[in-house]
Length: 368
Ligand SMILES: NC(=O)c1ccc[n+]([C@@H]2O[C@H](COP(=O)([O-])OP(=O)(O)OC[C@H]3O[C@@H](n4cnc5c(N)ncnc54)[C@H](O)[C@@H]3O)[C@@H](O)[C@H]2O)c1
Image (cartoon, rainbow, N blue to C red; front, side, top):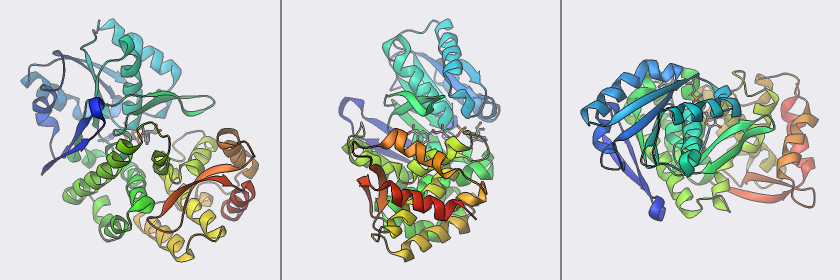
């Protein structure tokens, strides 16, 4: 099954193709959309071992010239140092304005390559070939690109939409289970935001998705991309409703920062915990039924995700966690901005959250 979705953004519109064993035939999708005949593939040390030869063969068949740059796997590659090395390596290949960058990998490669494409020769096209569940359902769509600073995640970046997104579901077969689970959190997120029926579908099919049922994985990816495409088309630069996609992320970023963006806590794992806390804070404010918090928590737990910060660390520094919110999100009056929930499928953006509510939510959830 190969399916096509369209992201409608005027002159920056593009297609998302989702299917099994797409890599072998990507040439037929890439050749018609690129301006010239030259592409540069950027991949990481893990993904290239599994999939670079398939992509290379497909490009050769389509008579597209290609070069490859392989960078180390992992979040540390989204740094200024790695970025500067990458961009110099790309320039060494003498690209021109028609050269297209291809990101073959997870969200790290997609974010890094997209950012490189947005500044290389004042902007060249790029194509996303996401190979993790997280990147297939989230980061490859929507045009947010970026790298990290020592002051925080994704603080250096741009909006630069891809020319095409090609998600080959078969690549998920080699993805470590922990990474698959991490991506799953971003899938459930779409149900929590505005689609309770999708959440019910995930409750029914989640286990099979994690166990590798490719047909259900394809459906989950398509539903997620359609949800994201709709929100991005309505608010490309996050002036309003796109912020809903950050459900659970404000908490998640604080936990990620406090664990040093390390393997101790993957992004999606932090998002799962963050979403539970967003429900918990909403219950505390009396706007969300406690049953919905219980239902959301129990599904994430059943699937194998962490749902409490204590499972990661027994002794969080609450003041340090709070500082992440007050530093980044403070409104003029000292109140905070959070995506909260009135129940499953009813997320909303609240700009004047009392810090005390968030503090108490952390105290209740981060201490034994
Ligand atoms: N731009 C956005 O809108 C957006 C949205 C969400 C997350 N992100 C970013 O995405 C990044 C996380 O992405 P991720 O979870 O994909 O991490 P990742 O790119 O680091 O990939 C996770 C690990 O899996 C390996 N891997 C990837 N595909 C594989 C495959 N098919 N088989 C075997 N191994 C494979 C990678 O080498 C890596 O070790 C974070 O930096 C986050 O900030 C961006």
